[in-house]
Amino acid sequence: MNLQIREVSKDNWKTIACLSVSQEQEAFIESNSFSILQSIFEEEWYSVGLYVDDKAIGYAMYGEDKDSGDIWLDRFMVDRHAQGNGYAAKLLPKLLSLIEKQYDYPAHIYLSVTSDNIHAQQFYRKFGFRFNGEQDNNGLIHGMIMVRYNQS
Image 1 (spheres, rainbow, N blue to C red):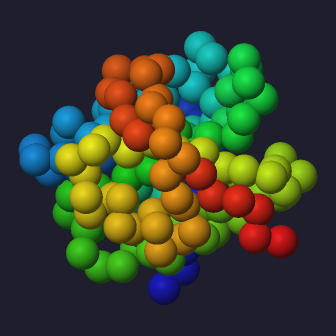
Image 2 (cartoon, rainbow, N blue to C red):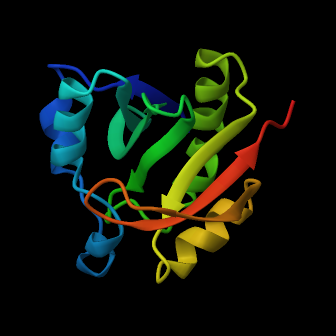
Image 3 (cartoon, one colour):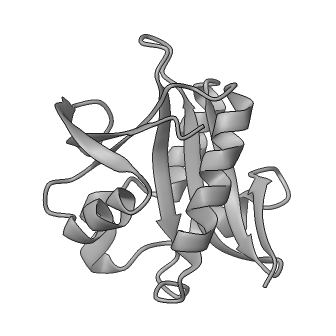
């Protein structure tokens, strides 16, 4: 299995934009289309496609908050048709490594998760994220902030 992270570009944006989560998960994350547009108009954000053997199976957006300077994993999703295969657990470490290298090993990486998305909370805990007691009221979907301290 060949896992890759590729920048969203004019060649793959339509495929990535069409990936989606299940209907039950839609309240947990902004759409890929919205996020791709956000990364075009807000240049501090990077959009990447997540691939297994040249097949797009997910999407992520990350970047540096222009006000605070904090580094955020702002979106991370696996398409509903690819869920349940362990891809998220294999791709997240690769993505975190990419972020750490791009931002010269930041002290913290932040993300937010809705209070009712228990599965995501448990998933992120496995990768060192912990709640910091703060709320994320930015964006279309508000959540509780989790932080991962630099592992190096």
